[in-house]
Image 1 (cartoon, rainbow, N blue to C red):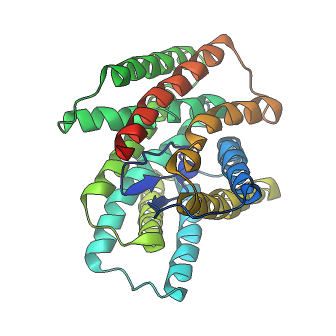
Image 2 (cartoon, rainbow, N blue to C red):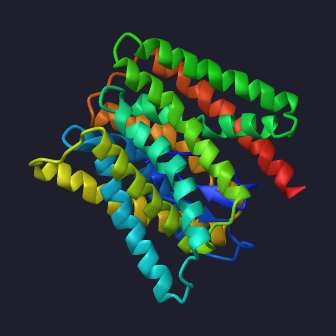
Length: 319
C-alpha cells in the first residue's frame, strides 16, 4: 500500500492509503448514526495504520513487486466483478490505458516502492515519510500555476524538515536504495493522484478496479524483469497477504468509500493525521521497532505540516 497515503479532498478522485485504491469523490453527506461513523473511522484508522507493519512482514518472505502484483490483481478483480454486478459498464480502451498509467504511478512507484523500502526501513518510518504525499501534491500544483499561501509554505518546510531528519537517520541503518525509494514513493503517489484528475478514468468503483488491475500487471512485469521469483512461503506470509487483500484493500476501501458518501470530507479524510502515529505504535508494540529521537521529532513535524496544507485546501474547497 502506500500503506497510508493521505488524500486531497478537493480533487475529483481521492487517493487512499495502503494502495487500497483511488475512490470517486462522494456526493452530499447523508444523515447516519454516530456509531456507524465511529465504526467506519475505526476501520480506516486501525486497518490502514496497521498495513505498514503487515507489509513489512510480507516482504520478509515475498518479493515486493510480485507480492503487490498478486495483491492488487485479486483486490482489483473483486472490485471489477462487484462493479459489473451492480450494473457498471465495461471500461473502454481509453479507460484501460489511462487506468494503467495512473495505476503504474500509484502502485508501482507508490506502493511498490514502499514494499521495496520496508526490507530495511522500519514500518513506522515508512508511514511517516508517506504521510508527506499532500505536500508533494501541493508542490506539483504550484508547478502547474497554483500559488501556495504562506501557511502552505510553512507546512512544506516543516514536512520536508521531518523527512530530512528521518532520511539522515536511515542513511546509517537502511540500505541506500531503500532510503531513496521510500522518499520517491509519496512523490509517485502524488503524481498518480494529480494525473487521475487530468485524464479520463472509468467512473466510480470501476475506476479503482482498472487502476488496481493495471498497476498489478505492471508490478508483476517489473518484478519479473528484476528477477523476482516466489518460492515456498510460510503460513505467516500467506496470512499477511490475506490481511492486505481482505482488510487493507477491500474492507478499508469499503469503509472509506462509505465515509466519503455519508460524512463531511474533513471527517472521512481525518486518517491522514491519525494513520502515521498509529503505524508507529504498531511497529513499536508488535514489530519490535525502536522509537528513536529522529522518529519522535519527525512524526509531529510531518503530521503538523499535513494539517497545515490539507486543512488549508479543505477550507478553500468549501468556500
